[in-house]
Image (cartoon, rainbow, N blue to C red; front, top):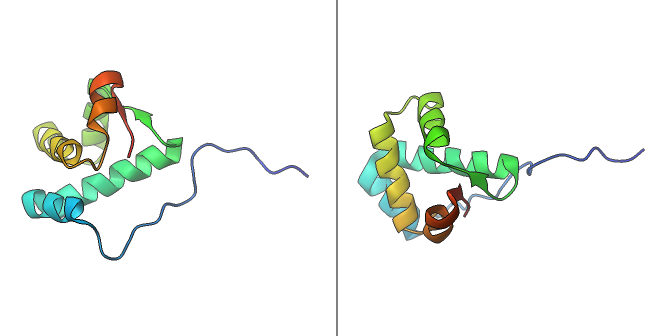
Amino acid sequence: MARVNKQGIEYFPLNVNLDNKFKFLQAKHGLEGFAIAIKLLQLIYSEGYWIKFGDDEMFMFASDNKIRIENFKEILETCLEKSIFSSALFDKYHILTS
């Protein structure tokens, strides 16, 4: 019997000792910033390796995770500045990918 074809991946590795990008994110935004970055990685990898992420998707993500949109946008901006996600691809195509 053939294996069922599915979208996304089952898991992604998360190092015990995170790099300075995540340390900075947590220092600036607290555990909420860290949690949002991990939730975004989960969302991305559940779809594959990138997701469309325009204004509608931002609003829905913030709503689903019970975070004010203004706070979410600040956290996302830090993630993009620190290259947790690709700012070039986000700016050009409105997608999130690590």
